[in-house]
Amino acid sequence: MALILGKAIITKIQPLTAWSGRLIKDDNCTMLGIEEYPNWLTAPPPRWDFVAIAFLVSAYLFLGLAVVCDGFCVPAVEKLRIQWHMSYDVAGATLMAGATSAPEFFIHLYATIITKSDMGIGTIVGSAVFNALAITGVCGLIAGSGIQLDWWPVSRDMLWYTIAVAVLTAFIYDGRIQWWEAMTLVIIFLVNTITLFLDQKLQRVFRKPGRECICPCFRPKGEVFDLLDHETDEDEDEEPPFDFCRWPAERGCCAKFLWILSYPWECVLFFTIPNCKRKLTRRCAILTFVLSIAWIAVLTYLLSWMITIIGFNIFVPDSVMGITFLAAGTSIPEMISSYIVTRKGYGSMAVCNAIGSNSVDVLFCLAVPWLIRSLTSDPRLSFISFNSKALYQSTAILFLCVTVLYLTFMVNRFRLNVSLGVFCISVFVCYIVFATLIELNFFFEANLPNCPLSYQ
Image 1 (tube, rainbow, N blue to C red):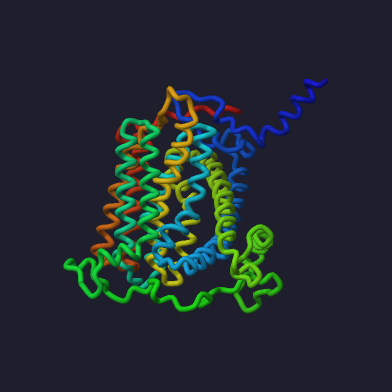
Image 2 (tube, rainbow, N blue to C red):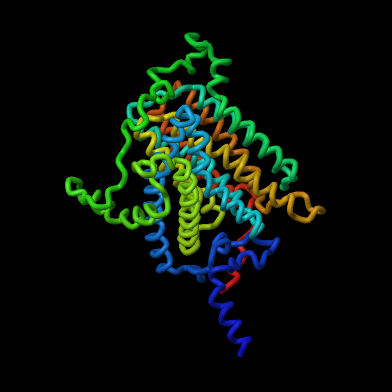
């Protein structure tokens, strides 16, 4: 009787604790991505009811992320930027990039420490191109006639990101990461962060006021708006917080429908995150920022899970999902945050958020879990090996995309407009096509066949 009762208890709690994909591993096949998540909505495909459920849940999670970013995270970043006397671009490359990179960090930490898989690496590499090209392209489309960017912050973040990608590509060439290689990435991250906080002093050293650049590519076409000197009032143009008791009668049907859908999210977030836009919690910007990061991490993980369920049931290979839908899913916080600040005219903040989050992904989100695992594992195995044969090629392509993006900014004289947006999105589509062919073993054998589902 005791054995039967014990078995019943284990069966009941299994969905909460068992990620059965880590139970069976085979060197001759690639573990299915869906086995990295709880098996609540997992069955032999196709299950169209699971697809419908996952699609509806994904849409509502996307709305929740939009509420967190628009109502809590971005206002907290703006207040911290003013309190710490940071420029828009530095705030985008540090505070906002760190907040929006939280999902990648927790996903890779879980994949490296718990399941010991490559899920986090593929997610970060796949989302990097989405951040650099797709988000920049969308910001260009939103900018319309154009937002003039300062060449310094874009060049600065591009330089650091290029260094990060180059070092990462060199380190993973042999298919493994040593502890000192992970430590090197962390040190580069710390140096990058220090230089960002000393950015104003560095500009006074390297940029002479009133002196024009010889190259016309670095001469702005118009006034650069989003600079610290333009800041006058902390509460200027601040949107009011969500009003729970006021029905939006003057708005359209779509706005009313979104208000109804957002109401449960606003209620939950009201009790879990202090809103720094309200008078009583105006001085809680740091707490708002930290709790927003926690919510963004949780919602993005759930969103990635739902997207994986959809791809599994419509027979999209995991390798293709990693560079397309899953990469876009984990980059939703960057997309929403960049969209919000671009609408306000802060183009440098949006671009530096997209590029800076990539640097954070490579130098912190990848390196720290690697360092933890290498220092806590068996001393005889002081390295971490990778299963993906296409990872080196992906980082090399990523390096090429970064170069193309910076040359595009130079040709456009660092103006964020529709033409730049269209070009970036076109390059992103070309990358997706080429990378998909690589992942499908069109040119060479990059990935092993998928393992069968372990619980059929």
